[in-house]
Image (cartoon, rainbow, N blue to C red):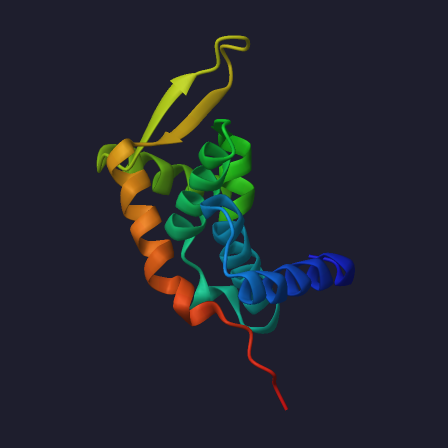
Length: 138
């Protein structure tokens, strides 16, 4: 994330804490951006949770009214493609996500969170929202 993008995320966090409202997709994106920032300062090997990053990315796309491509999920995971694929397959086997072929390009696989997982993600975001207030750091 560039310095400009970090500033935009920080500004949006300040706005949210002042007005107290944002969409599930926007809040999930802020959490995802926060994880990316932490990864820049700490070794990924001790912080990495590809499954969480993948699930957040798919959830965000779905909340924005679009499917998530495999490529988007791979990139969000910050893991090698083979590792990300294993996590995607596991999430599908556990019933958290569903996959389908793209109707316009049969080579592409699109990802969706299941309705149950969507509700669980919303509950998770509501639970962590009170902890997201941006403190003034000294």
